[in-house]
Length: 125
Image (tube, rainbow, N blue to C red; front, side, top):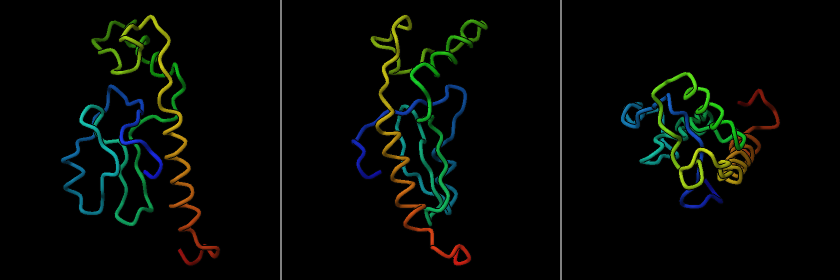
């Protein structure tokens, strides 16, 4: 989480929930990132060799909009994505507010948990 602001944004699915209390019951897992609104974002094993990410930092500006309008046009009872459209107006182009944090998270993982923890001789893993 080094280099991230205290608050940062990540698109999340509106159709999936991972309950914090369920993860807390598994001694081999730790929650790295969580928000009251979006829920669980990043979980790792205790050795930080396996990471599980529930958010969609890889989304382009309009990916979540395409999913939302697809489901809305099917007549599904769905809510508008939270904190996504400017002024909550689905006719406006969504704000791109997550790419810098996505880059930091990926860079940190690659540097601290792949590059620095992977021995030159892979038989030592």
